[in-house]
Image 1: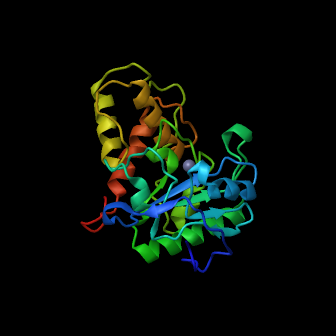
Image 2: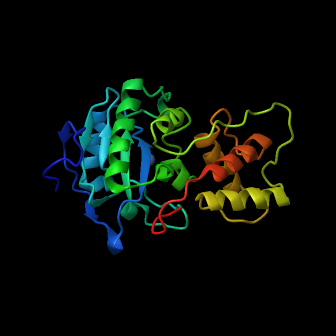
Length: 259
Ligand SMILES: [Zn+2]
C-alpha cells in the first residue's frame, strides 16, 4: 500500500491491490512505457485496481497530464507480463511501469497530446534520476513482448523524450522506396547479422539466420520504436543502418546494470 507518493509530480494516489515484493532483491533498472488501450484513464485505473484483472502499474498519465500513482516504486507491479530484455524475463521485478492513457490501435490510435508527453517526460526524468537508471534503459512494452504487444506504438514521441535525456534515439535512416529487402521465410547471413545485433540490443530474438514469423515480429517491434515510418518487419537497408547507429551510440552503464 502506498502511503506517500514517490514523485512530486503525482496528483492522485489510488492504490492497486495487484502488487508483491520485487523478487530476488531486484531493483528497478528499466522503465517500461505502455498505453492503456482503454477508453478513459478512469476506466484504466478501475481495471488496474481490480483484483480479478491481475494487472497494475506504478503510474497512469492521463491525456491532460494528470498523474496517478497506483503502486509504490519499491513494489513489483504487474504490467510487463511474459516478456524478455537482455535475457531477463522477470521484467516486473526490475522495472517501473508507466501506463499512458490512449485508446490504442483498436480504437483509432489518436496522437499523444503534447501536455501528456511533457508530463511523461518530467515523470521519467524524475524516475531515472532517483533510481540512477541509464537513459537507454527506457523501453516500449512492444520491445519486451513483441509477439503480444504493440504499445505504446509508432506515434509515441521518442525523439522528444530523448531530447530530455529519456530513452535512446538516433534519427532513423530514411526508407528508400523500391530497394530490395529481406522478407518472411528468407534465409541469409544478413538475417543472422541483424538477429545477432537485435539480441545484443536487448530483444529476445533467436539467431537462426532465417527470417521466421517470430523474427519478422521482432524486427517490426524494433521498427515501430526506432523507425516508425514503416514497421512491416522486412529487413531493409534503413533498418540495418538505424540499428547499427543505435548500437554505436549505446552508452555503457555501470557494470552492475544491464547494458
Ligand atoms: Zn503495455
